[in-house]
Length: 218
Ligand code: DX5
Ligand code: ZN
Image (tube, rainbow, N blue to C red; front, side):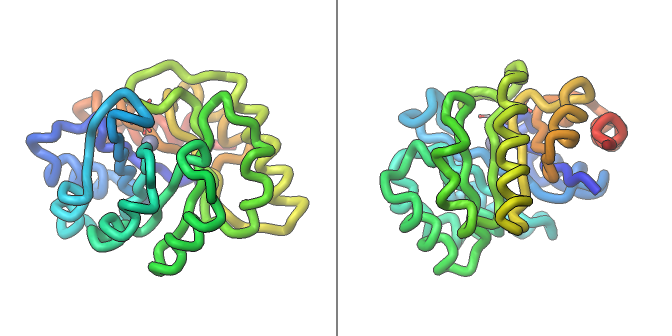
């Protein structure tokens, strides 16, 4: 069954605990936490302090998406804050293998993510070492952007390699996922759908999530 990871970037930040509780009760699988530093991406969002403060309010794994320069420097702080999965951009670290090992050393699941313009080949050699591969389907930085259809080919390529190498990492997609775009992603091999605006901009989150799940069925 396809997993849903609501991105709290589109939630009401003055009511975060309530917003998280709402999507947890509505059947979310992960809470997707978008960390932006104003350098790697042109926006500033959540730091370890906020991750730590939401942790006691949910049983769900915190799926932490680091969109920051020098990720190694901040990984321990997000581990301490209670992250279950930490995903780093290939574009932010010259020593990707070392960064992935650093996450695993803390006994947290390790993910790697690539931007729409980064070829799948850039992460081929790290596939054996990760628990999750995130394919960006928009340019990271903001919620509410339009899905970039060309990213589907990359998704298919990653799924083919997973099969060919006998690996079992999860494949996640992030950006512009809604009832129109979800199916093309699950058909291409995505296991986890991140969705921000398509969930939090609706008053009835359960209904919004059910609609995405229904549309995503392969
Ligand atoms: C974008 C973030 C996404 C974002 C998705 O940089 O990584 O997680 O919140 O938002 P939607 O689903 O609205 O595109
Ligand atoms: Zn994200």
